[in-house]
Image (spheres, helix red, strand yellow):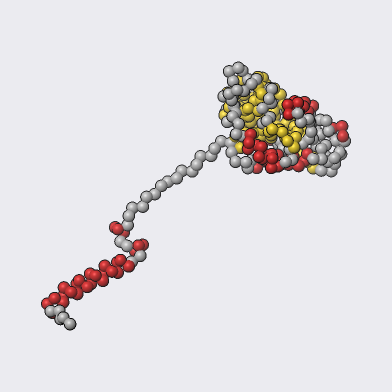
Length: 287
């Protein structure tokens, strides 16, 4: 055994202490290491994704309060219209009550021969005949309106088609200004159709197949008329009076404008504007 000279003991003690301190620092957790040894931390700020504009899709429901199978279709459309839960889509409901059920025990207060005639035009195009409840989506697809799954699926499919740009504005005098542009390439002769709709309507049915039932409706078309035809340059502009019935609830009214091919019945443009609130509103571009 070798002895260490007394003169070297202070140096040996200092070296041992240094080794011990280094060993202890190596055993420390990372979180306890001196701050000057911590690497810089990179941070990134992620901006929220902008909300995409919803694509309007119109669902025309040909229905009647005298038809026992119609309330379920009305309910299905009302849910889609109220909840607006289909991603990226705005469901525009046009409940059109036909009049050919009126002779079977109950006269539907919202029925009109004009809606029966419009359905007849679809029947000739689709070759499916007139029936209730019938749903027609963007003038392209028709099926029994009570099929909830098919209704949602077809709306999403219709939203993928090219569409025109519409701008609607209500002036201080109550008239409606309509502008159409950017009609999809290949569009044939097309009409510009105005529908005035009212939501929140219901009836207590006293006779017929739905006797005793309280029927609540998706937005009901109160008035339907053609404003004109899209020009050969693919544009249209007009100002038209609305002629609102004072018995209608203004807070529930909406103007819906369709650009619809005369031959194919396809709807290639949709715009809507609530009629509640101020009399004058800035133009709204609807994609």
